[in-house]
Length: 164
Image (cartoon, rainbow, N blue to C red; front, side, top):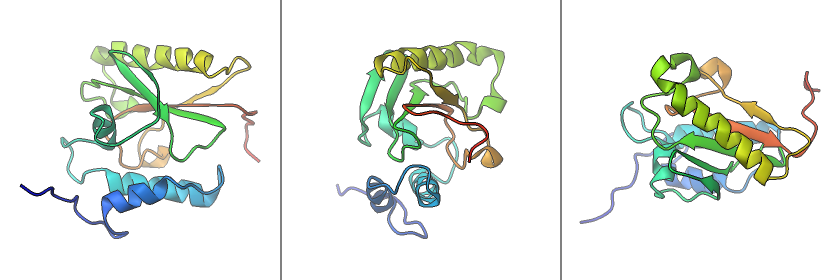
């Protein structure tokens, strides 16, 4: 039985795009954001209901630099960091929670686990002076194609608002 390769994208083979994404341009640059979107589009399956890139990371099919894991969540370093510390936190079982705007009362425990894990990871990473939690929602919120809610933990430098 031979291994099947993922379907190609406009940018070439999905795995090749993900692999090329591991060498990143400078933090916050347009190229970094473009690279993140391209990697997301390459890694995400076309049809919903099929495994997401995060499902594959949870199953260890795609390598990640894990910084914290318990029975409910997995936290790993972002491959395209937007701050000196940029960690993604995902629920191991998300109960169909693809976006924060789709949350229902049954998701309260999942959401609480994600935020509590962020607190643990921030302490573990030495972010005692503060950090930012970001949850993107939908295409206009820069959640391009991931169908698995995730939390970004950002820290290690002053997070100015408004930017610029």
